[in-house]
Figure 1 (tube, rainbow, N blue to C red):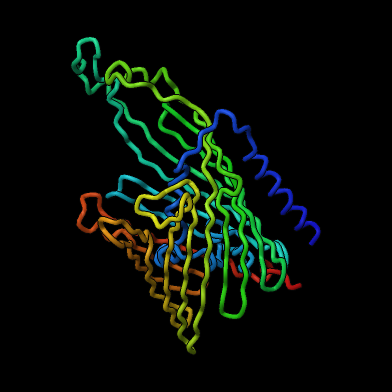
Figure 2 (figure 1 turned 30 degrees about the vertical axis):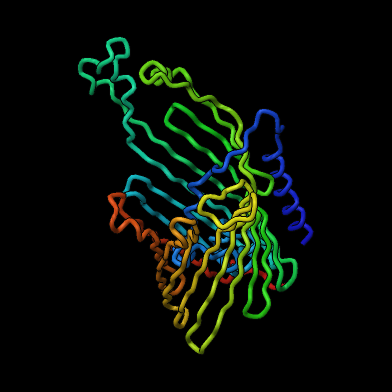
Length: 366
């Protein structure tokens, strides 16, 4: 128990160290590592992302690190998705293992990228104001990719109360033109009373710092061809996001219904289309799951709930399904209904989770 407390303090200290940097020269931005907003796990995405309180498996490293305390055995999960007709690929993988009766460790990896982007800057001759001869020979390709690594720790404080923290490292790159490193951490809590559960996750608790480096030499043609000012590197800060969640489970013999309600509170002054009071905006999510014998499940949810004077209320529905086959769980989530009539296509999110249920790896009893 003492070792667990020391490890919790150590990971929190390291995470704080990552985020501690001078405020001078930094600028606050509304969007940072937005690729992480895709979420993790087909179950949560099928329920509209209402999972801050309901995450009780390996995916909790993303939704609420305190939820890792609910795992009994080591777990591994992987999810792949392609968005915008396959233009953007997204991969997520995670692993967790109980350390002792009260402590749990986890690690998560995320990558989102666009590959084979054509670079035509060298194919244009600014002096002649026309393409170079054999322009195709001067066209190259590059990739734009974002990646994140989470190291999570959860601690069962009491039988019904848990806390957790995820230290995060972000890496972003746009070919050889620009790249950035980002550092942050999330801190979460989970409370359970009977069939009711409540959770909180302070995302980017001390603010996310992103340090950009720009290769201005490679971008010089932008100025020559388009007459535009070249971008500069610098440090950006993304403000914390407070994520609140609640859930309730209704059991009817071999049937169960799980209800989830989450609200994200952002503090950067989003007012267009978002529910807000002053500088604080609110982003609710609703989810429901019907399960039968813990073998199959059907899910639905609402996310991106918005209101505007011109359009009124709007929301994006989600659906999903799950199948448990012993130690293997396959979960599917679909939420881009607008894509059905769009040239950008739509997204299927499928995740596979394996529980490594060996007696030697079971969480120790207190």
